Length: 354
Image 1 (cartoon, rainbow, N blue to C red):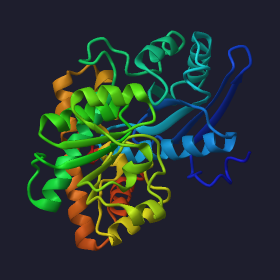
Image 2 (image 1 turned 45 degrees about the vertical axis):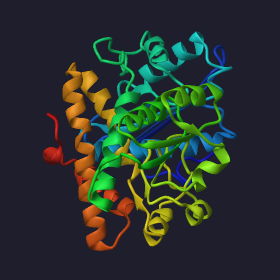
Image 3 (image 1 turned 90 degrees about the horizontal axis):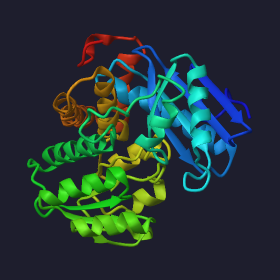
Image 4 (image 1 turned 180 degrees about the horizontal axis):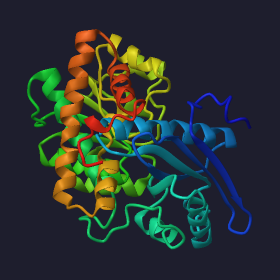
């Protein structure tokens, strides 16, 4: 398996593979760019269909973290880790300890945090073997879990999209379809419902659906959510859901969700624009989690983290306005803005102390 010829390889600084026979750990860590600071990103555990699929995911995710941190105004680079395996069947204390040793062996080039398939409790176990772990502080309002902040950022982004498109950010009566109501999606649903939104949810996990239903959301089948008539579609599960076929069938005015890499390829962003769908680039709107992780590292207050998360809406408004003026996709504009920051290592535009 050649890294340099992989489809998603993008001048990554580091791609490290690790196999620990005793624990069964098979993992990959990727560092995309560290011009602005150390590479930070979550550790995902997922039963990939192939090693190539795992490599593609970690390359795409780490690249996204570089762009995410740059536009969030953070002095951080982009990194990610993936563990190959089913988190419900293959995760063990021994595997997590081995992962901690692997991360520690990289000498701080990558700092990990929780992600899909891992938890704050898992990070604490990993932290027994390395100091290069975030999202475990007991001082944070949610015990180190960044997912409520990711959800808050998406909520702020949704309101910004409504203001731009309709002139009002009122959620009363606005129909939002959420694909995936795990940690982030459920927090998002709760916030939207409190503001009077009509929330529809879909998930393959019955426990997730039950929790969302108790909050007041309506449940539909997973195969129907991408084509349901709604004002806003919020993909909050896995990536690559916005294919050309899906976009042709979309009955939403806005796409604004928490999932990473929602576009199958960058070309789908222009397809969305041609269809008149306002797209909130995922690496901008879902930055709340990495913002909170940064403030946890600094020992700062939850209030300071929340104020920074609220700036996501302001950044998105700038992107929407520029995209409209230049007749370009929001994704293309957001990437250009991020590249102007991290490719030059220009920390003057960052919004927190470097």
